[in-house]
Image (cartoon, rainbow, N blue to C red; front, side):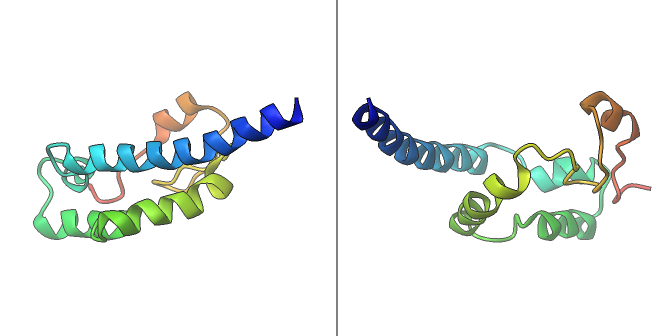
Length: 105
């Protein structure tokens, strides 16, 4: 039984790494700019660039993927802190009601 569990764990780790790379590549080749979508339709190029820098989207894909793989699991699992505005929320619906875009006025 222990050998079976060890073999399963050894196959899960590479699968998760491959899945992470595939997801990031799909996001990268998807049409549209995530920074422009977050900044809004009437945002200036400077505001879009500020969002891109704040989210780290100005870095190469390999750097973004590596940064996510290193920092996401320990810091974001089970966290109730919003990465956009930094507020702590008990429920998702509670957060949605008070979420604002800091770049839009």
